[in-house]
Length: 360
Figure (cartoon, rainbow, N blue to C red):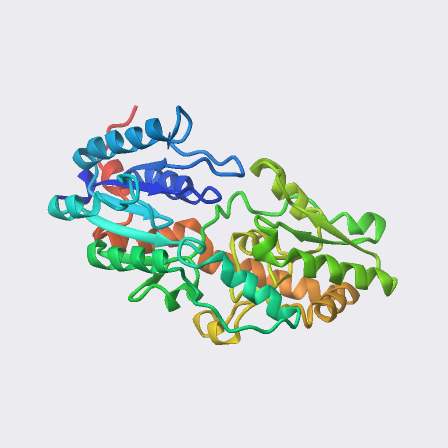
């Protein structure tokens, strides 16, 4: 089967518009691709197909099953997000994987974070930062570990969006968060140029996971020192409002507990903002040129104070951040990687379609 006739389905849990952005990118290259979400994204992102909008749980599960039966006849590549598939019943999950393998479909699973890391692990990190020492718990719950083992059995490729997840997903390949670099370009100046207040943007999709309480404490300490700072929370905002809020800020703050950054950091870097985030030193080997400054509960106030007092440093790191975001997170570059993973011999069909086309 040639690449022209192959169809791509990106399905599972939509997270911050990632599935839809990839599907639209593939379609711009004239591949046949669809994004189908089994959930409603909490921030309002939509996909081509939304299966969580109608009826109760039984209706949603029936819709997923019927969609799977249709999709099995219409798609060749199944790219699942968040470790979930389309067919499950009661306590039995991933029931469609054996059938997809029998039908010789290409099966790719993309783990993103809390799908394979227990939220209790973040609780341990937070309490440890407060000095409440207790034995380190496993990163994953037993149920999550069982899910990974089943994916290892049936998936052709296992992807992770962050290098820290290699620890819980064996044989995985890093395929990072994606953004549309055409959209994430700065169009306005920080508001600090008008009033002198340095704004620090933080988008706590989960305060419990991001360590927002430590961040608020550091901002209070900076204010107590007389520094003109303000914490700007991008919380419960629709997607079309977030960019403007980031642009008006001077510094980005992702999370201070874990070991890697998320999509928030990528968006802020694309806008030329210096970003502070907890980065595990051992993971920098995956991205030696990562310009993010390490910040944890122990050093966060000092790191932020240094940035607040030195605008030239903010500019330098912001410039490097834009280069980094384009190099690793531009959806066009990640789409190239994914098409190779899917087994496509070409990355675009546009030239093939246009050569020899009739003119008007």
